[in-house]
Image 1: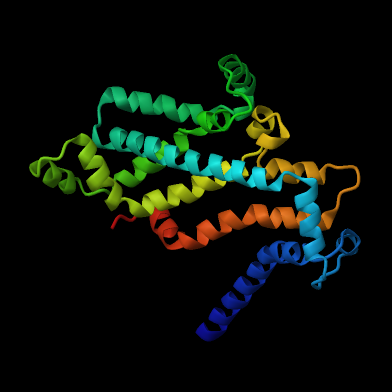
Image 2 (image 1 turned 90 degrees about the horizontal axis):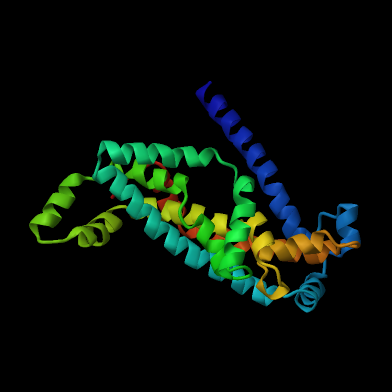
Length: 268
Protein backbone atom coordinates (compact mmCIF):
# COMPACT_ATOMS: atom_id res chain seq x y z
CA UNK A 1 0.00 0.00 0.00
CA UNK A 2 2.84 2.38 0.80
CA UNK A 3 4.43 1.74 -2.58
CA UNK A 4 1.10 2.34 -4.36
CA UNK A 5 0.58 5.52 -2.35
CA UNK A 6 4.07 6.78 -3.23
CA UNK A 7 3.54 5.91 -6.90
CA UNK A 8 0.23 7.78 -6.91
CA UNK A 9 1.87 10.85 -5.40
CA UNK A 10 4.63 10.75 -8.01
CA UNK A 11 2.13 10.41 -10.86
CA UNK A 12 0.14 13.33 -9.50
CA UNK A 13 3.28 15.49 -9.20
CA UNK A 14 4.35 14.56 -12.74
CA UNK A 15 0.95 15.58 -14.11
CA UNK A 16 0.95 18.88 -12.20
CA UNK A 17 4.53 19.60 -13.33
CA UNK A 18 3.65 18.87 -16.95
CA UNK A 19 0.65 21.22 -16.80
CA UNK A 20 2.80 23.94 -15.21
CA UNK A 21 5.64 23.55 -17.73
CA UNK A 22 3.46 23.31 -20.83
CA UNK A 23 3.09 27.10 -21.38
CA UNK A 24 6.88 27.52 -21.23
CA UNK A 25 7.47 24.58 -23.58
CA UNK A 26 4.85 25.93 -26.00
CA UNK A 27 6.52 29.35 -25.81
CA UNK A 28 9.92 27.90 -26.75
CA UNK A 29 8.37 25.89 -29.59
CA UNK A 30 6.40 28.93 -30.76
CA UNK A 31 9.51 31.07 -31.16
CA UNK A 32 10.68 28.71 -33.93
CA UNK A 33 7.41 28.85 -35.88
CA UNK A 34 5.61 31.42 -38.01
CA UNK A 35 2.69 33.44 -36.73
CA UNK A 36 0.17 31.39 -38.73
CA UNK A 37 1.55 28.09 -37.36
CA UNK A 38 1.26 29.38 -33.79
CA UNK A 39 -2.35 30.41 -34.38
CA UNK A 40 -3.06 26.92 -35.72
CA UNK A 41 -1.62 25.42 -32.52
CA UNK A 42 1.43 23.71 -34.02
CA UNK A 43 3.33 21.81 -31.31
CA UNK A 44 6.51 20.89 -33.18
CA UNK A 45 9.68 22.90 -33.75
CA UNK A 46 9.92 24.92 -36.94
CA UNK A 47 12.65 26.73 -38.85
CA UNK A 48 11.62 30.35 -38.32
CA UNK A 49 13.75 31.18 -35.28
CA UNK A 50 16.36 33.15 -37.22
CA UNK A 51 13.75 35.14 -39.15
CA UNK A 52 11.71 35.87 -36.01
CA UNK A 53 14.81 37.07 -34.17
CA UNK A 54 15.90 39.22 -37.12
CA UNK A 55 12.45 40.80 -37.37
CA UNK A 56 12.43 41.49 -33.64
CA UNK A 57 15.84 43.20 -33.67
CA UNK A 58 15.02 45.24 -36.80
CA UNK A 59 11.57 46.44 -35.73
CA UNK A 60 12.15 47.15 -32.01
CA UNK A 61 14.74 48.76 -29.75
CA UNK A 62 15.50 45.36 -28.19
CA UNK A 63 19.12 46.10 -27.28
CA UNK A 64 18.42 49.38 -25.48
CA UNK A 65 15.34 47.86 -23.79
CA UNK A 66 17.45 44.99 -22.43
CA UNK A 67 20.09 47.42 -21.13
CA UNK A 68 17.39 49.61 -19.54
CA UNK A 69 15.78 46.62 -17.82
CA UNK A 70 19.14 45.30 -16.61
CA UNK A 71 20.21 48.71 -15.28
CA UNK A 72 16.95 49.25 -13.40
CA UNK A 73 16.83 45.69 -12.03
CA UNK A 74 20.48 45.47 -10.92
CA UNK A 75 20.79 48.94 -9.39
CA UNK A 76 17.31 48.73 -7.84
CA UNK A 77 18.01 45.30 -6.35
CA UNK A 78 21.30 46.40 -4.78
CA UNK A 79 19.78 49.53 -3.25
CA UNK A 80 16.68 47.68 -2.04
CA UNK A 81 18.70 44.93 -0.37
CA UNK A 82 20.98 47.44 1.34
CA UNK A 83 18.27 49.78 2.62
CA UNK A 84 15.64 47.18 3.54
CA UNK A 85 18.18 44.93 5.30
CA UNK A 86 19.42 47.89 7.34
CA UNK A 87 15.83 48.80 8.27
CA UNK A 88 14.89 45.21 9.16
CA UNK A 89 18.08 44.80 11.15
CA UNK A 90 17.46 48.02 13.06
CA UNK A 91 13.82 47.25 13.82
CA UNK A 92 14.66 43.81 15.23
CA UNK A 93 18.00 44.36 16.97
CA UNK A 94 17.23 47.71 18.57
CA UNK A 95 13.69 47.26 19.89
CA UNK A 96 11.68 50.05 21.53
CA UNK A 97 8.02 51.03 21.87
CA UNK A 98 8.47 53.94 19.48
CA UNK A 99 10.03 51.72 16.81
CA UNK A 100 7.28 49.13 17.25
CA UNK A 101 4.64 51.81 16.63
CA UNK A 102 6.56 53.05 13.60
CA UNK A 103 6.78 49.52 12.26
CA UNK A 104 3.01 49.14 12.71
CA UNK A 105 2.46 52.27 10.60
CA UNK A 106 4.86 50.86 8.03
CA UNK A 107 2.79 47.68 7.81
CA UNK A 108 -0.36 49.75 7.27
CA UNK A 109 1.23 51.19 4.13
CA UNK A 110 0.97 47.72 2.55
CA UNK A 111 -2.80 48.19 2.46
CA UNK A 112 -2.54 51.15 0.08
CA UNK A 113 -2.75 50.12 -3.60
CA UNK A 114 -0.06 51.51 -5.89
CA UNK A 115 -2.73 52.94 -8.21
CA UNK A 116 -3.74 55.34 -5.42
CA UNK A 117 -0.34 57.06 -5.41
CA UNK A 118 0.49 57.01 -9.12
CA UNK A 119 -0.79 60.52 -9.85
CA UNK A 120 1.05 62.13 -6.88
CA UNK A 121 4.21 60.24 -7.86
CA UNK A 122 3.90 61.38 -11.47
CA UNK A 123 3.49 65.02 -10.45
CA UNK A 124 6.36 64.81 -7.97
CA UNK A 125 8.83 63.30 -10.45
CA UNK A 126 7.63 65.68 -13.15
CA UNK A 127 8.37 68.68 -10.90
CA UNK A 128 11.78 67.21 -10.06
CA UNK A 129 12.57 66.66 -13.74
CA UNK A 130 13.16 62.94 -13.23
CA UNK A 131 10.54 61.52 -15.58
CA UNK A 132 11.83 59.31 -18.38
CA UNK A 133 14.87 58.25 -16.34
CA UNK A 134 15.75 55.00 -14.54
CA UNK A 135 15.73 56.95 -11.28
CA UNK A 136 11.98 57.54 -11.62
CA UNK A 137 11.41 53.77 -11.80
CA UNK A 138 13.80 52.78 -9.00
CA UNK A 139 13.00 55.37 -6.30
CA UNK A 140 9.31 54.56 -5.61
CA UNK A 141 10.04 50.87 -4.95
CA UNK A 142 13.54 51.15 -3.48
CA UNK A 143 12.16 50.39 -0.02
CA UNK A 144 9.03 48.33 0.54
CA UNK A 145 7.21 47.37 3.72
CA UNK A 146 7.18 43.73 2.68
CA UNK A 147 10.95 43.53 2.19
CA UNK A 148 11.66 45.30 5.50
CA UNK A 149 9.26 42.87 7.20
CA UNK A 150 11.00 39.97 5.43
CA UNK A 151 14.42 40.97 6.76
CA UNK A 152 13.03 41.71 10.21
CA UNK A 153 11.42 38.27 10.49
CA UNK A 154 14.58 36.48 9.35
CA UNK A 155 16.68 38.53 11.75
CA UNK A 156 14.75 36.93 14.64
CA UNK A 157 16.81 33.76 14.05
CA UNK A 158 20.10 35.66 13.92
CA UNK A 159 22.50 34.73 16.75
CA UNK A 160 22.90 37.88 18.87
CA UNK A 161 26.06 36.38 20.40
CA UNK A 162 27.84 37.18 17.13
CA UNK A 163 27.15 40.88 17.65
CA UNK A 164 28.48 40.72 21.21
CA UNK A 165 31.63 38.97 19.97
CA UNK A 166 32.04 41.64 17.29
CA UNK A 167 31.74 44.43 19.84
CA UNK A 168 34.38 42.75 21.97
CA UNK A 169 36.65 42.75 18.91
CA UNK A 170 36.10 46.50 18.55
CA UNK A 171 33.71 46.62 15.62
CA UNK A 172 31.41 49.61 15.28
CA UNK A 173 27.74 49.45 14.25
CA UNK A 174 28.48 49.53 10.51
CA UNK A 175 31.19 46.90 10.96
CA UNK A 176 28.77 44.66 12.84
CA UNK A 177 26.20 45.00 10.08
CA UNK A 178 28.53 44.57 7.10
CA UNK A 179 31.04 42.06 8.50
CA UNK A 180 28.90 40.00 10.88
CA UNK A 181 25.23 40.31 10.00
CA UNK A 182 25.41 40.29 6.18
CA UNK A 183 27.66 37.19 5.82
CA UNK A 184 25.54 35.27 8.35
CA UNK A 185 22.32 36.18 6.50
CA UNK A 186 23.42 35.20 2.99
CA UNK A 187 20.44 32.87 2.37
CA UNK A 188 18.06 35.67 3.34
CA UNK A 189 19.83 38.12 1.03
CA UNK A 190 19.72 35.57 -1.80
CA UNK A 191 15.97 35.03 -1.40
CA UNK A 192 15.36 38.77 -1.19
CA UNK A 193 17.56 39.35 -4.26
CA UNK A 194 15.51 36.93 -6.37
CA UNK A 195 12.19 38.44 -5.30
CA UNK A 196 13.39 42.02 -5.76
CA UNK A 197 15.09 41.40 -9.10
CA UNK A 198 11.97 39.73 -10.49
CA UNK A 199 9.79 42.62 -9.28
CA UNK A 200 12.03 45.21 -10.95
CA UNK A 201 12.51 43.18 -14.12
CA UNK A 202 8.79 42.45 -14.60
CA UNK A 203 7.55 45.87 -13.43
CA UNK A 204 5.10 47.20 -16.00
CA UNK A 205 2.56 49.77 -14.77
CA UNK A 206 4.83 52.44 -13.32
CA UNK A 207 7.52 52.21 -16.08
CA UNK A 208 4.69 52.54 -18.62
CA UNK A 209 3.84 55.91 -17.05
CA UNK A 210 7.31 57.13 -16.11
CA UNK A 211 9.28 56.11 -19.25
CA UNK A 212 7.92 58.12 -22.14
CA UNK A 213 10.34 57.64 -25.05
CA UNK A 214 11.08 54.50 -27.03
CA UNK A 215 14.78 54.58 -26.15
CA UNK A 216 14.03 54.42 -22.41
CA UNK A 217 11.46 51.62 -22.48
CA UNK A 218 12.08 48.29 -20.75
CA UNK A 219 11.55 44.77 -22.13
CA UNK A 220 8.03 44.26 -20.68
CA UNK A 221 6.94 47.49 -22.39
CA UNK A 222 8.41 46.32 -25.70
CA UNK A 223 6.59 42.97 -25.43
CA UNK A 224 3.34 44.76 -24.60
CA UNK A 225 3.65 47.05 -27.62
CA UNK A 226 4.24 44.05 -29.90
CA UNK A 227 1.20 42.21 -28.54
CA UNK A 228 -1.07 45.26 -28.89
CA UNK A 229 -0.30 45.94 -32.56
CA UNK A 230 -3.06 45.67 -35.19
CA UNK A 231 -1.56 42.55 -36.81
CA UNK A 232 0.73 40.93 -34.19
CA UNK A 233 3.55 38.65 -35.31
CA UNK A 234 3.26 35.88 -32.70
CA UNK A 235 6.56 34.26 -33.63
CA UNK A 236 8.38 37.53 -32.97
CA UNK A 237 6.41 37.99 -29.73
CA UNK A 238 7.42 34.52 -28.53
CA UNK A 239 11.10 35.33 -29.12
CA UNK A 240 10.71 38.57 -27.15
CA UNK A 241 8.98 36.75 -24.27
CA UNK A 242 11.71 34.09 -24.09
CA UNK A 243 14.44 36.77 -24.03
CA UNK A 244 12.53 38.64 -21.33
CA UNK A 245 12.07 35.49 -19.23
CA UNK A 246 15.62 34.10 -19.41
CA UNK A 247 17.40 36.44 -16.92
CA UNK A 248 14.94 35.75 -14.09
CA UNK A 249 15.03 32.01 -14.78
CA UNK A 250 18.84 31.95 -14.75
CA UNK A 251 19.05 33.93 -11.51
CA UNK A 252 16.51 31.68 -9.83
CA UNK A 253 18.36 28.50 -10.80
CA UNK A 254 21.71 29.96 -9.72
CA UNK A 255 20.35 30.95 -6.30
CA UNK A 256 17.60 28.38 -5.79
CA UNK A 257 19.32 26.62 -2.87
CA UNK A 258 19.89 29.89 -1.02
CA UNK A 259 16.37 30.98 -1.94
CA UNK A 260 14.82 27.97 -0.23
CA UNK A 261 17.04 28.44 2.84
CA UNK A 262 16.21 32.12 3.02
CA UNK A 263 12.47 31.56 2.72
CA UNK A 264 12.66 29.02 5.53
CA UNK A 265 14.48 31.55 7.69
CA UNK A 266 17.64 29.47 8.09
CA UNK A 267 20.91 31.17 8.96
CA UNK A 268 24.33 29.68 8.36
